[in-house]
Image (cartoon, rainbow, N blue to C red; front, side):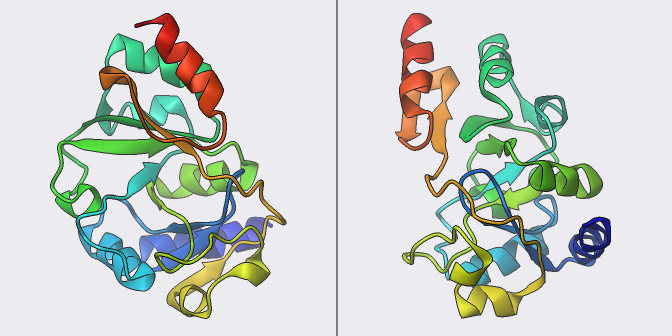
Length: 195
């Protein structure tokens, strides 16, 4: 698998797209700090540019290099990451408008999957979005990938079957769950305890 990781990391460095497994669904990754690479993700997914993408990092500590997290957001990250949760925080200056649709906040993901985190450790922040054409089902196995996504990706990392439930997207600072997914009840309980 080291050889595949090396190829995937080189592809990301070259501005190309890769498909990688997470604990939820397969993700479509590109250098999240490279606006051109991010645009390629939007093109491959046929996704509206106003629908922001999140970024994936190897661990919560790495996330703090790219976001301005409050003490409460940090406590939440410590409690839930790595895991099937996307945490929306104030973005840092390195995060391009292309990723966030010009918004001042960005979703951060630390996948609970060794292969995904190993890739992020080699590449830095990756786009964290499902590896499917927008509006189509997410891929739980490499064999489920849309042909357009497979064709767009320079490397596909096969990590077997994933869990299948999308991550919960939460804005901890505002106490809002934007999308209920995996672990949503625990996230809601945590927010309620601190309300």
